[in-house]
Length: 516
Image (cartoon, helix red, strand yellow):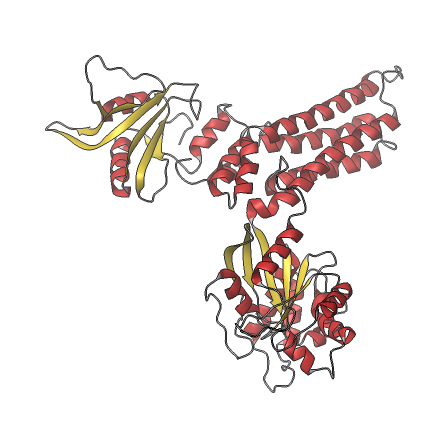
């Protein structure tokens, strides 16, 4: 396959609708359009660029002409088109069968089917957009929220590319000043003093950090926040998941350990897109804490295997039943998900906790909750949920005292309907609003340029190179430290596609749908 081939695809997806568009791009686009389009007014007809023409799609063979649909056709001559090549579009009725029939005939005229993302890839290769704009096309198509759409639109209009260009300009200025020190070491006045050099690099690092932080703030809008429900067995995690989703997704029974693996569903909290995950109930947490003092560390594969082998023969507290190895694996996956979560909802069975203490003592309750709290990374975002609050009521003052000890919000929930609620409690809406306020820590209406995950990683790599440069400039000669600047500039260039990144952008465009 060649980038010079003429290609075609359905640009409006495979589902049926009122309208469907077939796009053709390449040197034969106009020729193909003339072979399949029959204008309503044939007299002296010529295709007027960027003008909709009304007519019919027809198939002509030796015996007859068959009209398949009434259509609109438009021709975009190079370079003023989406791809920068000659482009033709046929706007037909949105029947899936009809569109595929039309496309099949078009392909039979000597062109090929477009690969995933190939139209946008050609737009990038032909200089119609940089790589960050090309990625923004896919982000607009898959945006999970209005805010995510706004952020992607800013990138499509080139704002991220402009910011990256400004950063590269700063690097180029520093690099030129270093070159003076290399080529004209006797001209001390023209060389870059170390103090000034450090300040320029610091300013550059601050600008890059601002973009990385923008990704962290925008991530929930762009990708959906990972919300993990965690806690001991029968604490009510699955019931909470069903309540948030508004439907019976997770199986809820009185038997402990119903959820063996995690369940994940897309949903929203107060308008914020999330990936809601229900995890296997945690058992024998006191035993695990006793044997793994630093339980908050990352649970990698080797550590997960170690824990599975250690807990699979243990019995559930108060029951003479060994933990199933499958459930043990589920527990390890729960721990790993807690480590990756954007926010964790730690669910506690309030009735069970109060049954284990003589009277309501906040310090004792906190000690009972401490096992699960210690499993979370130190700076993780979390909300503690005091479940079954209709059976174990807490006052507002008691909740506030518990929040000080846990250093996180504590919400009292009752997932069973009751007509006589006399205790202080919260609702699912309260939980949604609280989670959103924790996840979104900036003014949502503020205009912001936010990179995606790939771009943020490249920015971090560029920042790391500058950190090494700061450490080396005082001890190494300029010709060696200049390599750090070139490396940092290369990482930034990979964001907009100004360097040779064949493997990178091929992977990016393969994630597009056909027709884009």
